[in-house]
View 1 (cartoon, helix red, strand yellow):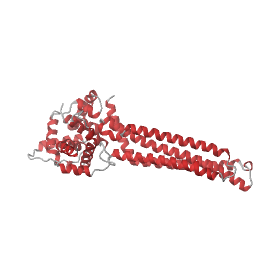
View 2 (cartoon, rainbow over the protein chains, first blue to last red):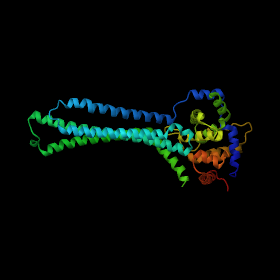
View 3 (cartoon, rainbow over the protein chains, first blue to last red):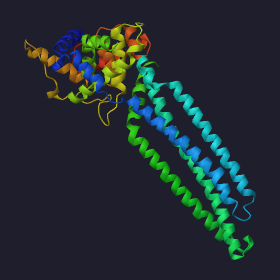
View 4 (cartoon, each protein chain N blue to C red):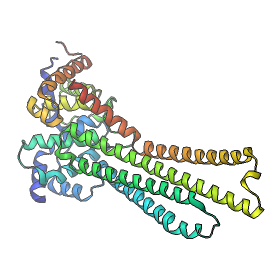
Length: 230
Length: 162
């Protein structure tokens, strides 16, 4: 067989349709009516849910930290300037998280994955890879925001609780040994570290389970297409 | 518009069948991909403005859908052999030699990557370099380079003489 024969073989195979019967207009209409979500629509939905969760989390924690917590802190004696300093830190955290949210949203709108059918293969692959990367980064930003918030809450709670305990026992800070304070801090850091690692591993696992393999294959296909152009 | 679309798709469904045959080695996957391609064509139909040939547009949407479609652990550009039983030749005049050649072609093509499949499909459909470049998004020169590589690979897979 010669290579030029392939076209005629293909032509014959196409005519025989390899067992595929022609669909009638009614069948096509049924296909249109029983359609399910495409991968791009699923990613889009997940990203939108991710954005909603992130915004919801920012708003909830903002209200909690800047409205409810100050009401509670007022009842704590000598809450001191550290609460104010932590409040500023927390505010910066919200500001950065919100900034990232806006950045991701604008980037995502630019990609417009819904228009992949109007793009060529290379652009379509690039769009989906970018959308998935945004989705993954959104997870990480949410995690970072959550962890910073958690750390600030932990430090505030630790200091406040510590002061209250000292007051109730009629002790001063100087009366406690250095290693006890260090141990308490170390335990707190270890707990925070364990929570951080747990949440990070969970997020990674969820993403990889959902789209890890898919993203890997898309990237490999895109690489193959781009390698051609080198 | 729906009626016009259904009419066009009914007449040109061969294009979708060909893409499905090239990309899926399982009948169920072919059916799923066929439906997905039809749906994607319908969604982008309003934005089709005759800037390119209708068949080029159809190939573009169908190939985009096939390569970016997602089924856990299945369907994406895979390099698995086509199962023997999935090739059923329906013909009034049975020609065992032709059937063997068609089987060999499908089996060899199934070992190519997603990109290579698209290139060889468009070659077999006698698309010009310009059209292939338009569909894949690479330049015509690189289409030539890629085409030569794919041809070489396919010749090796099919044991075709130079």
